Image (cartoon, rainbow, N blue to C red; front, side, top):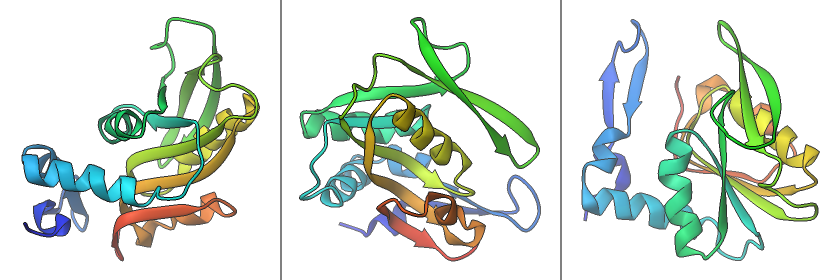
Length: 174
């Protein structure tokens, strides 16, 4: 079996010149690499005591849900504002050009629950920082954050200082 890095396509100059886009669709389109990616995330949770997996839409669902299933944990969705049908809490956060709002159901996390956040990629870290604040507001404790890919050059990890953060693959650039 190939290493996981070998399944990730690097597309130069997308979405703009000078950027190398790390495409995970090639990971999802291959059974071996999909299994390997989930297994690698699960390996980073070895020995971690937690109750709930939280994942942001949409790729956090793709990687977080199978981890929750395999480890017999519940899964909590974080979605864009207006997409969840029950009572929610929300958090606005900054994007490169503007801002966005994410929401969680108030029932997703119970006070005292230990939470693992899983997403496909960390870039600037704004989305995950906002999710940590939602978890805290609901009385949960973030015990680990795992990404499939980290773009270290964008320094997103700095926004998550104080948390146990791990990535399966780390690219030094942007």
